[in-house]
Length: 89
Image 1 (cartoon, helix red, strand yellow):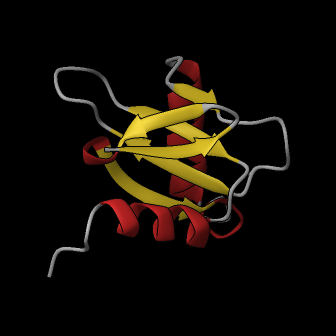
Image 2 (image 1 turned 180 degrees about the vertical axis):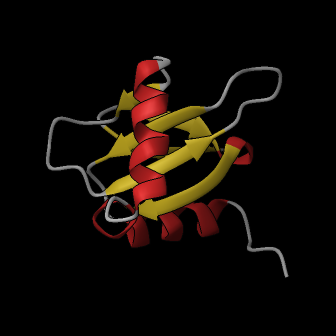
């Protein structure tokens, strides 16, 4: 199954490592450093031109990590993810 992140960008649900609120996550120094490194390595992709709200970290099998910036709220993405993949206990 795939999770739609916005602007015709979808990722395999099994590749998702985490979904983060960009406002809260970007205040932490470690997160800013992580994003800066990911951008320098060309691993950041935008899933829309609107105001970014979410940070979605993916690790496809057999590939490098990928970070998506999504205009959708983390709660929206989490709800969509749970509808296609039930949460694990």
